[in-house]
Length: 230
Image (cartoon, rainbow, N blue to C red; front, side, top):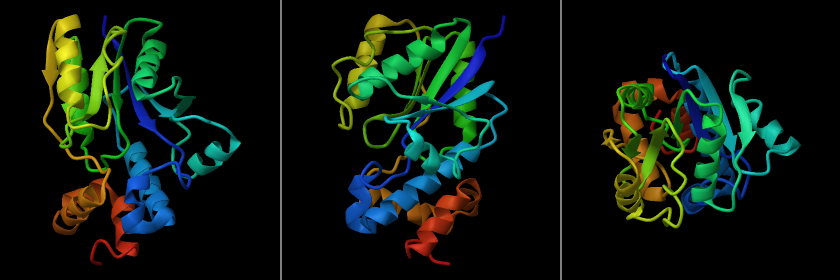
């Protein structure tokens, strides 16, 4: 029997002080919120025939203010849930546990700060899981990962591993290979955390019409902020 495919977008409500604070020196607080909001809009809008359900897991609190910030950005067809746990490893563990609780599912969690990541990469992750992989990772270019997928919970996978560090992926892969069977890697892709990452994104949008079609809201926001030429 084919597994139900659940894609979980890990994100935040676009509010000042809660998103992309490392971009504030380049964009200001309002600019950082605006850019992340358009990242989220573009990621949420991607066509996904490869997923049976799409979920947005929001960093707490998922309250009325968060809902008001998300409503204009995220389609109503995407189910919202609140991330649980004291830190990112705990929240990832909880997200997989929640979505896998009913069984017979393949769950892929991806970030919301890689606006140029093609949806085909998500489809490839599900295909690897369908083909028998225990764990699938999509490495980002900063030493972490933009995506992780599994078909059964691996409770110890994320615990005690430092996030937002250049060694995050290597440490997680070492853990994965110790506790799981077949572990597979997708192609690497950039995410956007720092002003240097933002400059690379702006350059990609400036030179590549395909990138602009994939992330039109991001391109428009960066154009308005003077980061991409009109």
